[in-house]
Length: 197
Image (cartoon, rainbow, N blue to C red; front, side, top):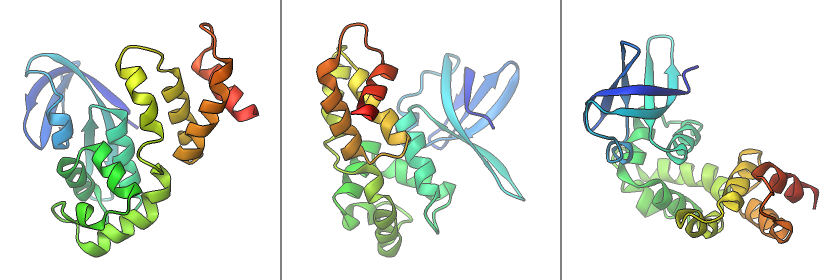
């Protein structure tokens, strides 16, 4: 499985990019959200990837952030949503807006994405709503990380979410353990403290 590509950006288009990695050109399908973050052609860059393999085809999908890739892979778990539609969803709405629409059950917002009708939007919301919880819980840690401060709380909450905890619960667990934070506390320590409370 190809997890990421790092090399020279040979070409970038709205829907795809070509990465030159050690003399091998990889065509990678990308959402608009990632296109906006790509450097100029000829510069070095790193793309997180999802390697989609079927009996008749295989394609690489690329993302500039882990949030985009996570949303893409979660969308693929929905019946009737393939990689093209998942990429379209990420191109239609930024990840944070998509998460907010899911958490708020905003069918109209999600069905406004090209290729997604009302029934598919309802199915996406029904199956993914609990995966992201309140759009404000994990984001409460974002300003601290963005300002160059302590990002350990957000990292720990995201790690707990990836372990299967609901985002709301993960945020509460980390906040409860945060009272024991010291300058030497690692993200791993914080996760352990949150899990053992």
